[in-house]
Amino acid sequence: MDSALHLTIADELRRRIRAGELPVGSPMPSESELCREFSASRGPVRQALAALRTEGLIGGGQGRRAVVLDAVAAQPFATLLSFSRWAEMIGRTPGQVTQEIAVRRPDPAVAAALHLDADDDAVALVRLRLLDGEPAMVERTTFVASIGRALLDVDLDTMSIYAHLADAGVDLHTARHTLDAVAADARDAELLGVAEGSPLLRERRLATSSTGEPLEWSDDRYRPDVATVTITNTRRTHTAMVRSGA
Amino acid sequence: MDSALHLTIADELRRRIRAGELPVGSPMPSESELCREFSASRGPVRQALAALRTEGLIGGGQGRRAVVLDAVAAQPFATLLSFSRWAEMIGRTPGQVTQEIAVRRPDPAVAAALHLDADDDAVALVRLRLLDGEPAMVERTTFVASIGRALLDVDLDTMSIYAHLADAGVDLHTARHTLDAVAADARDAELLGVAEGSPLLRERRLATSSTGEPLEWSDDRYRPDVATVTITNTRRTHTAMVRSGA
DNA sequence: GTCTCGCACATGTATCTACAAGTTGACGGC
DNA sequence: GCCGTCAACTTGTAGATACATGTGCGAGAC
Image 1 (cartoon, rainbow over the protein chains, first blue to last red):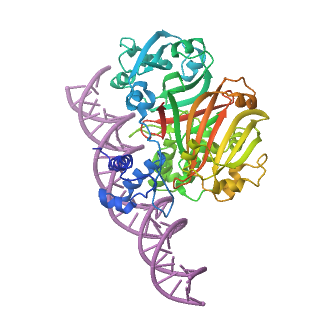
Image 2: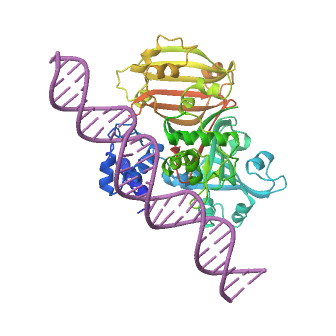
């Protein structure tokens, strides 16, 4: 049970769509019906519907009832940050082999992304991530010192970093993902078990707090046969997706 | 000037952030200040702020003023569908060379994505897209017949398809983009001027109407040195971004 | 039989009010 | 000087109301 009424309504409607009680292509209940059902005024009902709209679950226009769309289910925020959570959500077993962990001055590009001065240092971590024991991704993550120190005394091969950071009260709030394709270099190829030069899906990610302070930078390279990224966007509620030139 | 007040407010605030009048890291004006400034009640003001939140432009929490975040500017919907519009937005000159246009039965995977029966046919289009005259992307698009027919009598090497479809009253409303990395095959390599086997960023896109009817399917392959895709997502307003397994 | 007008209903927009809950800073007790 | 409490301000949530605007269908004109 959620505290806020509009969250309760949104969750219940998401559940019905997932469960097929509201089939794809069928009209949603009208706002007034939802008001009666949840004993709510139009405010919370519209707030819930707006959330479903931005997630791409429903569509439609003025004068017509909203329509259930054939959308991929949006994943919770944590799933997009944590490889372990993601693996569990898709029903695979995550694994990891730490290659390197070090406290050092990051290279200039990373330092700039993390808003660090030239003499600040950070915690760099390189891990090979596995799905069901098979190599899936090479992760090169840099944490700002204040967060990174908490990681030096954990067993990184068994513990989920993000679970640990959440316990420590770190508020990861926003993440910016930049996707492109790169050729596997010698080290990528060796770790992932692919040929040197073969295509990898690269995700570069900057995670920040709710006030915009950078906390983590990561360069993750996926075998393209194990991971893709899907984004939904609509005319009205334009999501923050950007295609950028070189 | 927008018709709706909340859109006016949102646009004005976006402009101020873009222009640096509200610098990154600084607090936004309080809701009551915005109410006074725009002679509005809290409703439209909060609606505008919510839009900026989902775009990743601002962050913050209850009791605190919203904070301007260092976000990439979200691109309008049309920019994500139309190569020409995108090129113009980033200040480059778009170009195109049509390789093939044909009415035929699409292959089964595409037919399924477009919800077509086995005997329906569709309009297939292959184009090489250019930025400032240089090869940038190979586009393999399939339109459902009802839309595709309108394209057979236009000059595809000069006309923007999406401008033409918009004039014809086609309501492209939602797009689902799936991103991964592929090796250039012989044809990709020849058209794009890269070595066979070199990495390309592939975007597979399904565009639908506001009621969820599929209208267009596309397989676009970008030279990774000319295009990347950036997505922002937050803990609260989880956008419809998904990382999926193989 | 067909076309058109208008009504019922849907969502979109905006206002006012009220209270809950989190943050911040200032004041006063110790 | 330090700390705790409280007051003022902020955003979050929810209600009621009103009107604008777009859709679709049925009744009536022809």
